[in-house]
Length: 281
Image 1 (spheres, rainbow, N blue to C red):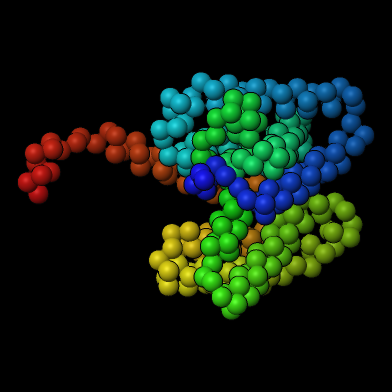
Image 2 (image 1 turned 90 degrees about the vertical axis):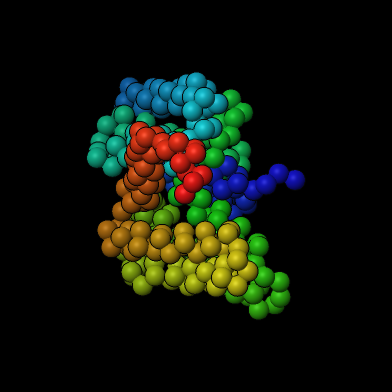
């Protein structure tokens, strides 16, 4: 049995979340394009195809040579740069709608193929049958799902895991999916009523996973706890702003990618001490 790798593999919960997010994104895009001319819709399709082809070419040419050899954070940060541009003009032009179409369709491909990496790499990974680990906000669901499955045996840990899972689902739906479908009047009204304290509920699963990590010295549990902890302020921002997750969540991955890339570059440029000198120390 192959090892489960975060950023490459995803479980049932992660696939369902990606499916729902992809459908929500397509619904939002369809609403934006309602009343658009055939030429405008065709132009969105052209930009979608151009983005898919560009990412596929990069994946094919740089996969074994570069992507497989550098940190997944760097790859993810670079691949997400066009997506971050979406936040500067959401729905205002065919190009930005092409980005939205690319992300939404890619999420559906992620869900269907089981690839747990960054969304824009889903189609290239499927076409070329090369899956390299890359990171996405949806890896949070993968980590939490893995942590719940790897919980301690017994009735009490099982109940705690179920409660933690329900909290995670409720927060993800409320502060991630509802903003994407807020154009529906009933959903928009419910989304506006969500308080900040609801996002803070993610601290409960974070504490549960943190305790499990400390008690069992589990790396998976520790990563799940840290991810839930770091994601909490992101959802707090979303609850206050009422917007989508693009700028906050994908932007955080790009920021980490830039930091990791700079550190890697500095280490590469710094002169290395001779092996004999390091051995003496």
